[in-house]
Length: 453
Image (cartoon, rainbow, N blue to C red; front, top):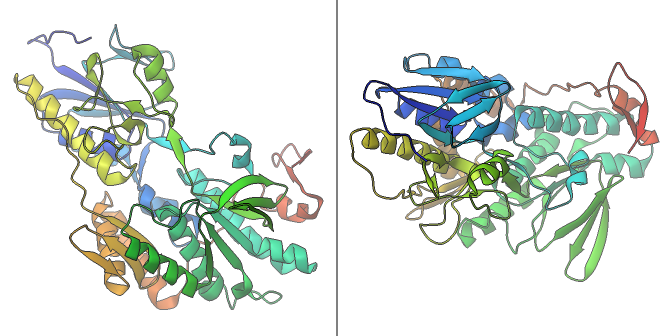
């Protein structure tokens, strides 16, 4: 349903979500004769591709985050609202934020995705994923707490379990996490402890398919595996996780079932759409795929609602090659820019051809001086790929001060092999370590009632 445009009224664009898709849509509309309202439950844009560096102590959360109001401060037609959209009314053309209804002429939904445990949601307690700042801080706490606990542990088997890190999922996030933890164990922390040799840590990277980095060219997957092996990472492909419970990871490799004792399991295996996918399905009868992503039209709109667009990780766009576009930042960025340009065209009675994603390549960091880059026409590995990875990530950081701080931090880390953000924070940082042998944890600092895990 689309309201006819009133020439005496400024077109109202509401954007839900301040990730790459929503932010670039807002920036593209900055000089357009429309009013833009950007709504997000966070007051900052998060550069998710570098979250793993927060999780492993190389960067702090503020280094990869930019306040939305600051980023859009020069966009005088744009206002930012802090809040969570919990419903929409497509007939009245309003989004519901708490008790407030905000009208729109065009709606852009870009609320992203969250972890998927493939129906085993109870695993989240034992294997955190990496999508938010809170996820990264929790992951960082678990990684560094593992070394601290191992330092105090006198039982060899329990110490081995503390020093065993299992990463589930061999995509870019899993590969980058595995490489970063291996560098922590073999370089950064090697001289910091007295009772343990951190280089004895075992890092396992598990992938269900026959190679890690499946979207990359096979030769780059092989190079990534070889680089991880040199760092001490054990890569196991064609491996399915069937259970995670009581510090035991159960694996299935063909017909063989194995159990691995590990107190630090990290999840990088799958994602599912945010809850807005279900809301859109209920309110517009839009179709969703098994991951909860909304199936969109060639112009990224919802069928029957040409003024409602879904972009980024929440969208299933399969019109280009029959497969959904990957949930990566360049896809969301291009979709946001496209929808903004389409709105501009529609305001003057024109339109645009169907959206077409331009794949400029894939990148994955393995470790210092080691990365893989697949640009299609050019494939890089080793030092040159690593340098290219650094430049691209610096370029896509939103604000100049973030670019500067990250460059300085990376330079310092490169020459000193140090990671300055190795902070253990969180309510359970002390209590969980003290009672870990009893296999319990406290729900909070103020309510110290033990809960069996």
